[in-house]
Image (cartoon, rainbow, N blue to C red; front, top):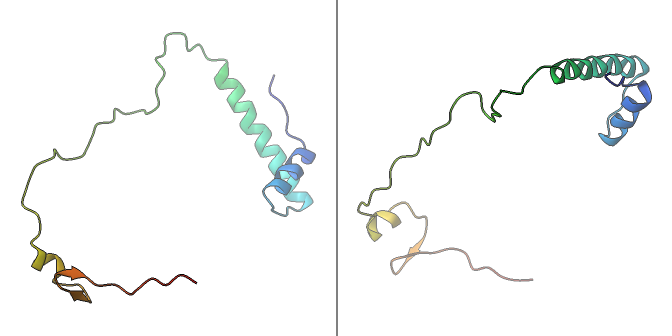
Length: 98
């Protein structure tokens, strides 16, 4: 029931991916890709009628901390490591449009 991947299909995929494959590599990849498709066809034969769809095998939970209000940096502390500052602000080079 599964479709076989031939060397021409592999060559086309290699061209789309802009990679160069030797004749030996095309044959090997055709064999490997066909094997992968065969495996998927086996999976599709399984009875999944009562299996709930999942996107993750384990439950996910939010790992972020709760928001809490707290004191921000003082202006002096924020500017402490600034390479250049002027009148209480960060100073940066002027942006000149060409």
